Length: 100
Image (cartoon, rainbow, N blue to C red; front, side, top):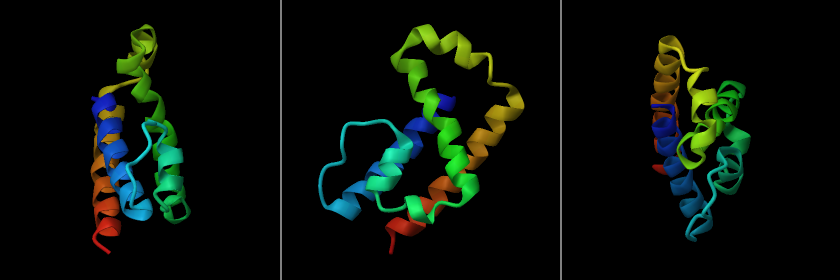
């Protein structure tokens, strides 16, 4: 579940990159770098920045299966619910930015 939340946020940030640069977004998965390239890093609240930093490692889960068990150990039901909620909130925030 956390991997898919990472994917959702990554694609939203890549939309911001495409809008800000009028170019195809880079083939990277680093959420912070995408936020910088998408010209929205400076507008991130401290809470959203912490969320992106927390979510970033979950990209590793599918790409590097040897880390999957270690990452899975950190995911409780409560943490998954919080990540899902924060993903929804981030998506609403980025959508508002993209509509400007």
